[in-house]
Image 1 (cartoon, rainbow, N blue to C red):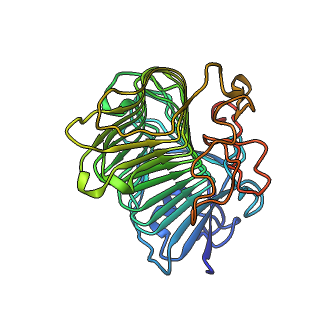
Image 2 (cartoon, helix red, strand yellow):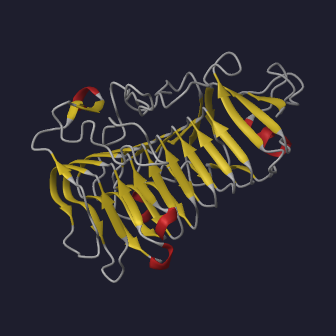
Length: 375
């Protein structure tokens, strides 16, 4: 698909028509100028908002709208997998008061290689409310008790993104990421800090190959709708509370799959079914280490094939390496193994990180942690 290539820089330039980097739009000009099938190439730099920047224009299934950050040359940040890069290498959008945030409300949007954060206690910096949207390789940070990002529409895919929240009160806005009335699917994402890592209300949400660390109440909390929701191949580490707090709203839609996850150093309950009136959780093949409780005693949480470790399962957690050591009971023990139609690989680790990759290929992507955002 050929986009209409447009350009955005901190100060804009030349004719300010977005036709080239020399004639780039500012961010505010891009808000009013973007049309269906445009791709906004946004150059690295610090974009300090002086007002709300709201993209409301929609694309379509055949002519979406894209926003892509770059450093010096178009495409130079289009790496594979999640990596932490300096704020000077991708555009960093800074929100500094309740009247200064940015959001995408138009449908059929793709966004990649962009960082955003707030620098005060006023507001959350970014909201993505694009139905049929995709967010890839982006970084979101809140330095206050406000959320780092909010997703509030249907069918959003989030890949290889990093979310950093701060601790504050236990209110809604102390959540690292908040999803509301939405269908959001996270792949290969990192959720660091926050009173909650992800807090949700209604509909469907799933996590695959994600990493959670440092939440003070729960890594994920909320109501869920059956089979479209699930937790597969994730790692939960150093949580001062519960890892998963799940209330199942629609049992007719089927149980929530919780498979091949590592739960390590969880002060509360690793898997906590908060609604005993429904048969809703189906944990299978998970690894537990040093949890206050592995799975709550509610008989409605149906569990099988759990394994435990008596010592830390990770290679070097202080150095950011959360792959499993060979002595872990989760090493080469991931489910399903050679079940027909699912995965013929016989030596998959439990959890989100695997090193080395299985001899047959298919190892999970590695994530490198390099501290907070710069810029």
